[in-house]
Structure formats: structure tokens, C-alpha cells
Image: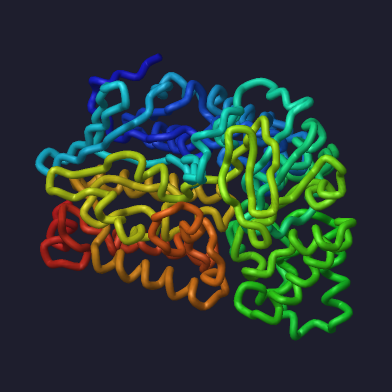
Amino acid sequence: MAVNTDELYDVIIVGTGFAGVYGLHKMRESGFRVMAVEAGDSVGGCWYWNRYPGLRCDVDSLEYAYAFSDELQQEWRWSERYAPQSEILGYIQFAARKLDLEKDILFNTRIASARFDNGSGIWTLTSENGDTMRAHYVVMATGCLSIPNKPDIPGIGDFEGEIVHSVQWPEGHLDLADKNVAVIGTGSTGVQMIPLLAREAKHLTVVQRTPAFAVPARNQPWNDARIEYWRQNFRELREAAKNTRAGVLHEYGLLPSAAVRPEDRIADLERRWIKGGPNVLYGFSDLLVNEETNNLVSDFLRGKIADAVDNPETAKKLMPYEYPVGTKRVCVGTDYYETYNRDNVSLIDLRTEKLQQIEKDGIRTDAGFYPVDVLVMATGYDAITGALLAIDITTTAGKSLREEWGKGPETYMGYGIAGIPNLFAVTGPGSPSVFSNMVLSVEHDMDWISACIAHLKERDFATIEADPAAQAAWMEHVDAVASLTLVNKAASWYRGANVEGKPQKFMPYVGGVNTYQKRCWEIARNGYEGFLINGKPETSPARKEEMAHS
């Protein structure tokens, strides 16, 4: 490969999922000396590391794709509405080859630490094997869902069978025939894999802490007419998506539920249910701000669980009551609830029976013992901040990201962090991130970051970082917008509630992709207001004098 770790780069990008691949292309096209660093042996990000059975995207594949390249749009053909992991990985790899990016990627290199020298303005990144590389700017494209969450369950160290985490699924086929399998976790991962594991295992035991709202995918192959329509109109369609709150072309209901006749409310929910996918959540404009509307949709979905599950007691155990719908991730799956009608499937509902411990050959609760040969951990991720905090990010001025975020993460616009210059996060806390179409969001973020770095280089400015006051004001706004909704009524991974000891703070910005992106470009047009450039705020007299002579 062409990467020279002795060179001083303009930009180093950490991670080569959708964000890193596009970012490397964008930075290179902008004329920067840039390299990317990847822990795996291929591009792909979460679609490289995750390969568990049933893994698919929950955004239509035609939308879950790059929009910057006519060639990629015309040459790649998505096979299905919700593409499987292997196809999405193949797409990212295809894009990297088409753009000739692999020569600028250092593979099999996991970054352990990153240290900024406040005197020289240079970042030094050190890998786990001791290699170092240097750059003026670092872009963390490490992903929101990349670090596995491994809870400390009593007795798990005594288990003598095979333990598999969904994020570290073995390559090739995992033979489960004639085996007793247990899955711990019923979030999106569990909802996707449980129906498939049940078909293969001798017996499947599902351990549920909190039940999930799941909607049917209704997955199906794309027809030629739909693909051709998207190819011919993808730029206009992507622009339309940018002007929505989720960055996805859902059918957005424009009225609150109270403005719709009761019979029409149910008819519309039924129509959306039949269509499949997350559209069932977007029928009313006030789902996340009005408890009556939320209860209406929640009751509708609980009714669908009752319809799907034969045993009324099991159906009741699968019904979420602890949180409003939409405040935890709504799962998109196939035959999830119907799977509990199988004779070889058991449900441990931790709301009604208490987990005592994992033993060498099974799971014991206060209701009995469940034999287990293979234990599958579908316990999700240390989301949004986990990958950033896995790297020891410090400065010679004594700043440490782990210390700065000790009480919860704070950024300015999801990009900049006060006290840590020349480092940009992609879809970081304080941005729409996981409340959006991630491909649309990472394209926007990399465009914005590239433009910002170009602005600095053109004016020979050495450093940029978030102004502490602007950062505090933005995070107050993020919190205020969240407080206007129902999102804080759920102990969700959006808040870090799934990771023991993690500070509880709602991390995404729920004010809308359209609102957020508009504000980002306003900041750029105003000379990157809210950032300190060369240590000075945009509005300071010294900063204005610098601008006048640049």
C-alpha cells in the first residue's frame, strides 16, 4: 500500500465505514494529504464487524447509499428493500475500489491513543502495536455502533459452553443443530436473529430484560422500474430527504392524532403496518411529544403482538409498557413475534422471573433451570461515545477526553470538543446521528468538516476547537429539545442506560436533520462562529484583525 506513516499528513481519518470511505474520498478530492486507519482488514465499519444471522439495515437500501457519485448510483444494483449485511459490506467495498481508496488506508491497525501537541499543533496517533502516525487534523469516523456492550452477568465466567457476542460473530456457519441455544437481549439484534436461530437450534431460550416494539419489514426484491426511477432522480430525492426530520423519505403525517377522525387513525395505522417498515411511526406529527398519541400507537402495536402470539401469557410478556414507543429503537424484523409460537422456543421475561446466575451448563432463574450449550450475547453496544472513549485522547495542555466526558459527553454541533483542538467527531453526541439516515448524515458531516479544514488552510490558521460557551449553549439546546419530547421516559441506549456506570445523558439531537444541517452551514457561513480559531473567538477584535490580514 502507499501509506507512509513517517509523513506528516493534513488529515488522518480513523475508521472506514460509510463515513471513513466517503471522508477519505472527499478529503483527497479537496487536495489534502490524507490517510485512513482501519482496525479490520477491509473497509465496511459496523457492516464489516457485524455478521450475525438476519442482520439487515432498517432504512430502504436505495436511500441507505451514497448520493455524491453518479457512477455508484448507476453501477450498483440493490437487490432488496432492506439489504442484508453481506450486500451492504459489498457495496462499501465496491465504492472503495471504484474510488481507488485502498492505497490510502492502513488496515489491521487499531488506534490506542491520540495526543495533541499544543506547541506544534500536531496530532500523534499510536496503534496498539506501537506504530505512530502524525497529522494536523484528526477525524474520528469510528461509528456510533461499534464497541460491544458486555454486561457482567453473575456466573457467566463459569459457563463451559460456547459464548458468542453478536458483534463478534464467527466467520462462516455456526452449527447450532441439536444444541440448546440461549439469546440474551431482545433489541434490534435479537429481533433480527431470534427467528433464524429458532429454525436451526434444538431449543432456543430467549432472555428478555425489556420487550421491544417490533414492526414487520415486509422485505421484498426491488423491481427494475423502482431502481431505474431512483437512478434517474436520486439527487432530487436525496435533497428532499435532507429536508425531513429523519433524513429518510418516510410518509410523514402532517397532523396530530387529535386532528384525525378516530376511524381514520386506525385505518392509516393498518395501512402503514401492511406496507411494513418504520413508516407506522410517522402517521402523526405529535408521536414523540403527545402521550395520548403515543398511547394510541403503542396500543395498536401491542394489539398486533396479541394477534401474532398464540399464548396470551407469552404475548403479554412480549408487550412493552415501560416506555413510550419511539423512545427506544423500534425494531424492524420478520416473524419475530410469531417465533414464540414454536414448540422449541422459551421466553425468560426478567420482569416476571428473576435471573439468579449463569451456571456451567445453563441459566438458572427463580422459576427453574434452562439447559444451554451455546450462549448468544445480543446485548448491543456502548453506543455513540464508546468508540471515541476506547481511544486515549489527550493534549499536552493536560486535557483528556475521558475526563472531559466523565459526567457525560459534550460537543459543539457534534463536531468539536472544547479544549481538544483539531479533532472532529463524525455523527458525534449532540448531532442527529442514530436518529437519522446515517449515510445521509455522514456525507453531510464529511462535507462540513472538509470545508472547515479548507477554510483554515486557506487562511493559514493553525488550530480550531469548540468555544466552551458555545459548546455549553449547544448542549443546553440539545437537552431542551429532548425535554420537549418523551425520549427521556425510556432507559435507552440513546441515554447510555444499557452500559453499567455510563453517565445518563440523552445523546442525539432530536430537533431534526433539516434543522441541524441548516444550522451547521449557517455556522460555516459566519466564519465558524462558536469555534475558537488560533485560540480566539470569531467575534474577538484579535480574531477580526487576523481575518482582515488573511
